[in-house]
Image (tube, one colour):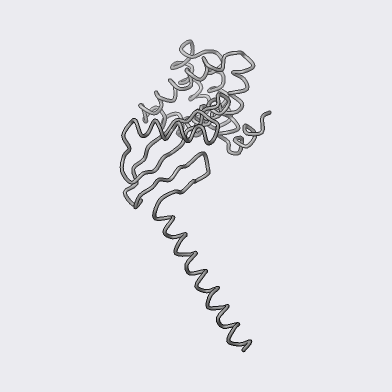
Length: 200
């Protein structure tokens, strides 16, 4: 298994997401499964009551299995349908949306695509956003999908989140770093002056 994929498999969602990726690859249907999972994830996202129903502890596993059969049997591929039923049998339906998200992230990684959250003080124009996305892509050797998020607390500059890594290039952070450096240099200078006085 590729190392970067092993790193992904940390949570329940990641373990199931990776299992679905491997099943789809074995069946030679990764792209088709990715499209199907994306549609199903959108359905659950647009129908929160349905997502709540599936995740509810009020329904028993067998009752939920019957509901899944009525809704999705013949509508989904056997691979995805059987996978969802397995998630239900394992009592993990409350994790289904997270599993689908993890699945999508792993597929993107295998395709050399990475999502990057970009935090800026003011929204960038589409042209500037595209240019920045290309520069970041070159820097990390990936095809980048930028998700722009406006954070008015930033004085200027930007912050990037790539996976669980935060790359902070905001002016506020640079000022804090500079302040710490000045304080540290001041302490060092005072220490040197004190040592000089003692040695006289």
